[in-house]
Amino acid sequence: MLEEVAAGLSTPQKELPPKYFYDHRGSELFEEITRLPEYYQTRTERAILESWMPELVAELGTRSLVELGAGSAEKSRIIISAMRGAGTAALYVPIDVSVTFLNQTAAGLRREYPGLTVDPIIADIAEHFDIPSGLPLPSLFAFLGGTIGNFYPPAAIRLLSRVRAAMRTTDRFLLGVDLRKDVGRIERAYNDTQGVTAAFNRNMLLVLNHELKANFEPDAFQHRAFYEAVNHRIEMHLVSTYEQEVRIPGIGLVGFRQGESIRTEISCKHDRASVADLFSSAGLHLEIWRPDSESLFALAVGRPV
Ligand code: AVJ
Image (cartoon, rainbow, N blue to C red; front, side, top):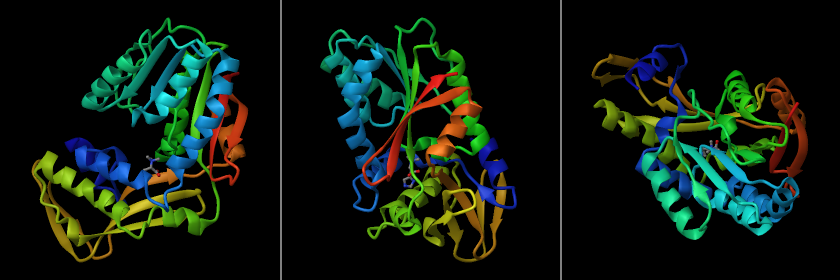
C-alpha cells in the first residue's frame, strides 16, 4: 500500500486506486449511495437481473457461478435462486478482497441453499488471481455493478482476458455496465444532494490516515465529480482547498497547491459497441445485450470466440 500510495502521489496528476474507499465505513457509505434517488445503477441492474436471470440461467443450464468482486451478496442471490429454480445450482465461487465479507456471505448462502457448494476465493481482482479448474459445466462468470468502469481500458482487457483463458465453450461471461446517457443525469449520480458521495470520496483520506498514520485533513479537500466526455467516464477527485503539506510516514511530506487534486476514481460508461470492442479484445463475442427500458444500465453476455 505504501508503495502504491507513494507512486500515486508522485505523478503530475496525483491518483489513488478506488479500492482504498472500501474500509468498513466506506462500504457502509457505498451501500448508502446505492439507495440514493440519484444513483440509478444498483436498482436498475437488480431489476434487469430479477426479470431476466430465470430465463437466461435456464437456457444456459448454468451449474456454477463465479463472481468477480462479489460485493454485496444480494445480486448473487438473484442468480443463485434462478439456478435453483432451473434445478442446476451446484457451485458458487465468490471472489473478493474482503475476508470478513466472504466468510459471512458464504455461511449465509450455505444455510439458505442447502446442497450448494460455496468456495470463496480471497483475491484482489485488479491483481493476479487463480480461477479454479474443474468447475461444474457450464459456468457463468459474472462481473456486476458496473465495476469494470473502474478499470482503464488496458486493465479491463487484461482482466477479461484472464477470465476468458479459463472459459470453456459452453461457459459465458455476464458483465454489468453503466451506459452513456445525458451527462447531467450521470453527473447527478456522483454529486448527490445529501453529500453521501462526497463523504465516500473523502473517506479515502481517513483510510490513509488510519492505515499509514498519515495526517490528511479531510475537510481541506473538496469532492469533485465530472464527466470526461473524450473517454466517456466520470472522474472523481479530491481537490485541495489551499496550499498544504501532508505527512505520510515512510513517504515524507506531500505538497498540494491550492486547487490541485487527487484522482480517486474513474467510472467508464459504455454502449453496445464499446462493450463489443472490449469483449473482442479479450477473445469474447458479445452474444446478448440487455439494457433496461430507459437504457440506463445494461447486462452483456459474452461467449468465448
Ligand atoms: C462500485 C465502481 C460501480 O463507479 O458508480 C459510486 C462506485 N463511486 N459513487 C461507480 C461509486 C461513486 C461505483 N462502482
